[in-house]
Length: 162
Image (cartoon, rainbow, N blue to C red; front, side, top):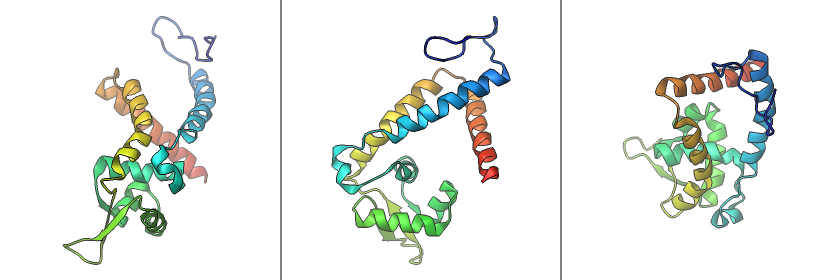
């Protein structure tokens, strides 16, 4: 049984959800979520830069965790350093990112978001962060850990099929 918005009705007193009903619900929910994320409007200031949703993860890492090397970004994004290097080069030429030599090791390049771009990038990511904050806020730390671990397991299983 479902509600008018397609969400499953709670199963029994415990509010539990059967495995197949959970799978059905998530298979219907995930494409809607991805569609909404892809349609998130790019702030006016960033529109001429032709940024795309694929840039969100890289920008989110730099926004939340601060400057990093290309190799650190590649490791965190789980992609090849060459992929990150190409993206950083492209975004640097457009003025979205800054690159500078690491003072401790001049062979390494530190990547960061310029101060003048930070508010617009923060605004682009804020809607998603706010939605996650509202969704995860009522949960206990253990429930949040279980949710995040479940999402990571789902992603791993999808990656194994690639």
